[in-house]
Image (cartoon, rainbow, N blue to C red; front, side, top):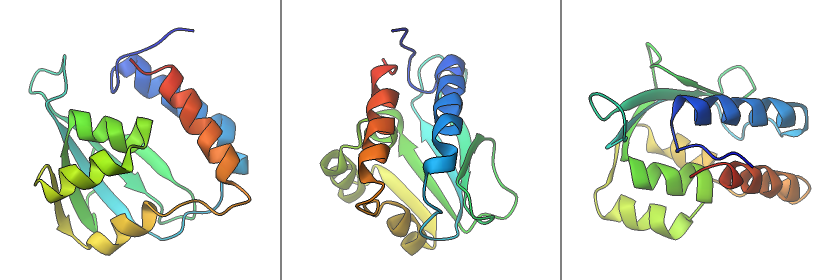
Length: 139
């Protein structure tokens, strides 16, 4: 299997394709949220940053590059912590980073916490399968 560096253009496209494959089977988002994300220390980026957003306001989860004009919160996170949050789902590493000041949240943090909730039992196996596949093509 081909693997791609986390957040490289190839990885972003592969992640979008994977998400589209599962889109019809994923539950509706637990909460409406408009979140801008800034990932720092990204290798092979000229300024070391990647700007993205998560938007669940229309009943589906949209994850794209670029920022929203009117986010409810902005999260700034380093590359390794972003990988732990979005790929390996290492909640302990994420919590350590949060309490260690590596995750900066500006705005309504309750929305971020709601998005991190465990999936419902009936869809959890599929969600874990999707994350395993994401992890498998991430280097």
